[in-house]
Length: 332
Length: 306
Image 1 (cartoon, rainbow over the protein chains, first blue to last red):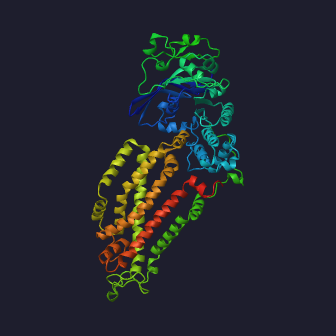
Image 2 (image 1 turned 180 degrees about the vertical axis):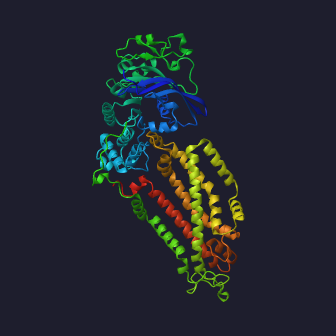
Image 3 (image 1 turned 30 degrees about the vertical axis):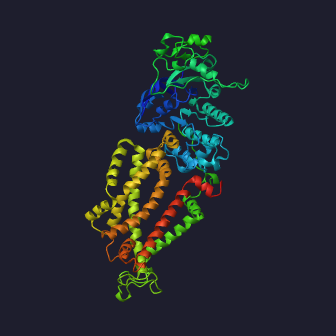
């Protein structure tokens, strides 16, 4: 087995808010191998974005407390001095943000912003960096890259901007690419193109990918592994087939049940009733119990279930879920 | 993890690989298309030229006293009239331009550089940097402006240089606050985080991303402050701390003419008009610049698309 690109162990993030301490990420562990894609899914507010921003030290230092370990090729990102972290951002980890409309500086041409990423790591002459920028824009499938390089962000469409963001993230050939809802703001055809693009680049460069999304359709298309987050915890993980075909956690089952079925028109969309718990006031016991339709175990309301192996896995990875009620769920 | 094999850039690279044409030329081109800003810019240019070539342009010396010609209304011989000592007001306005503008530019220059650096650092780094810098600004701000300027001049003695310094110090906290407020908003933008995520240094973030996007309010503040600085110089001269008589400055002339306002309006009117036109042009040019420096506005002004 090859060494993982990223190994996250017991990641915890607390944010100080006016309403008290928010426990946004509570003991998250996972690993990403070279060329592997791990999808992180969950509702809004389940701690997906915060968990990856914490890896790169991009949370505001004045309010965020981060603990745990995150080893990138064996080097702990969370214990890194600021200078070293800056070197790692880019060549080590590239990141694509959710909203392409706000993640480019409106005052600079896309070329300048690409060149910035290239020249931040090593002495590259300006003309050479510019040549690379044009090349990268071509690689991400932007039409007429030689002209696009001198355009301002507002002159490009959302899909084009997101391609630029991906080009920037890839400009230093990162070992790990983090896509934080990279296609959520885009329409499905552009989304499909971007996913193809990332898969192709992954095959070419052996990049590990963490793909954050709440779109289970994307998960089925792109991921090798799935990690379901709820209330800042991993409530279920395993291979795509295990998690999507044989969900063991009531929450995962609820998420899958909420996928609208286009062939059978329904008056009302299926939902998981209720809203996620406020991170300032997490429930005691299982984080999901207030919304859980199963609640078949007396420990549900008092004790957080550990992440335990459930059922026989078809793949090489264990299929795990944090629930007291795996058997009841599988019977439903 | 390294940039793939780099070929030496070929001689005669295709047109697309050459950087776009210089930005300042494009900026100037667009500024000219904005008629208000263009006119304001031309008038200011004229005023600056007058200030530079004041000796050559003034019809007579600033202090040529002709008591027999005192308090003459505007005429062909004296287009702006004469004052209570028979001095030609046109000449004094022309020569006063240099004093007023020099003090104004110098004062705002000091305030702009010091204030926006302080505001930038305070807003970007936050925490104790912010606390320390902004509390110092609060202390400066707590003094009544004129009192603070008087204190500086009392220590350093009167004169145009010290007047500019005094006004500059008074305006530093204004620029610091405007800059900090603007930076606080820009700092949270995703593109700043995105740029950080590819390993940009703090220096780069500040100069390339935060400052340009935080600039519009600072530009507007600059043009307004230039106007106020000219007026502040007038106030300090009126109190006897700025320009010393008999040297002319617009503010001082305004103050001296005050006593004759119902007897000879032209004493205060022409220096007042000079201040008014200058201040107005600074403001119009500031507005125009702000629009032109924003690439989104730029495309609209250039007629959508290129």
